[in-house]
Length: 214
Image (cartoon, rainbow, N blue to C red; front, side, top):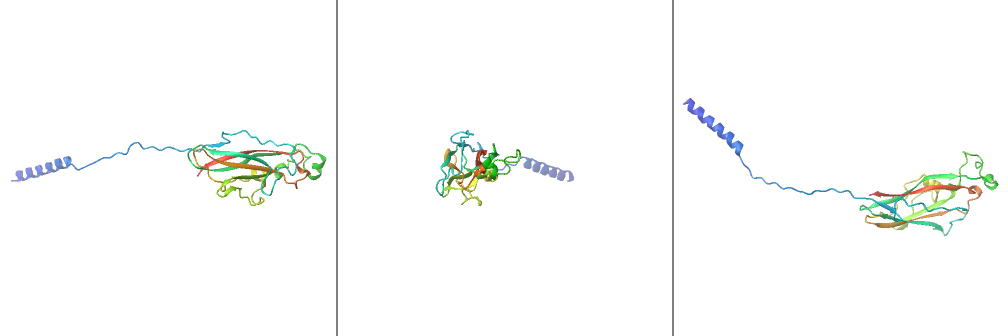
């Protein structure tokens, strides 16, 4: 009897193992194929090209040059900004590599500029007296960068802009991808109140255009 019961238990155990090993359930599998991630592009063009050659070269400037009406200068340069990429970008600019040069020191300048005859000490004063007014397309038409120390936020010296940036980043209209353009105008003037202190002086600088992803 014990041998019979032992055999029965052995059969049940083997049956359970076999059943557990061969048990089937309903299954279904689906695959999502062809997944692709692609990066967009930002590509700024200035006047239709990359890194355009500077074309601002003014000489023999004097007080009153560029002074026009109450709002605009008569010396202006327009740049067309294009975003030939696929992602909308925010434009802004900066003034870099600014260098003031004294060049010479004649009697009229020496009378008002005590450092112009001291090599290595005196620097040119044109950058402090050449004003730059910048405007570009904004939400309310043409808009100027917000600068508290400028006259109505419009006119500041080149020396000022060289130490304050980014210029226009929170003011100007975004440029959508696909070749859309936005004009930007730089206007220069020397106030009539400037005197002999700028005689023979010069200023050199770069204007760098930016377009940032938003």
